[in-house]
Length: 115
Image 1 (cartoon, rainbow, N blue to C red):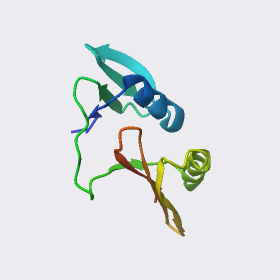
Image 2: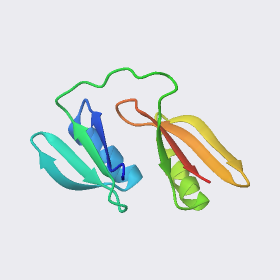
Image 3: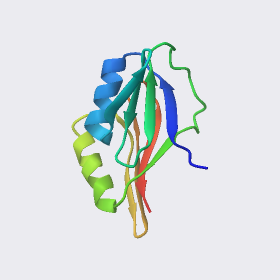
């Protein structure tokens, strides 16, 4: 079995699309009705659905985004430093693990890491 997609309710489809394309490298794949499916280079689909309003999630809930190298984590963090509204936990570096927490335009918490 392969977990292959994540379906998110979004307030503004174009803002969400721009965020995931600009910062996380997703590209448009297709529409199903009003729901936009983006895909990353590994074939993971992200469904952005403007038909539903985002709901508050538990404080512990987050989406993990594992990068291929520690350098990729650092590069994304550096890019986001110009957009401080997205950073919610500063970068933490260890010999075998590096991460930071960010939020997307709808408030979903994302943990970007390499280990």
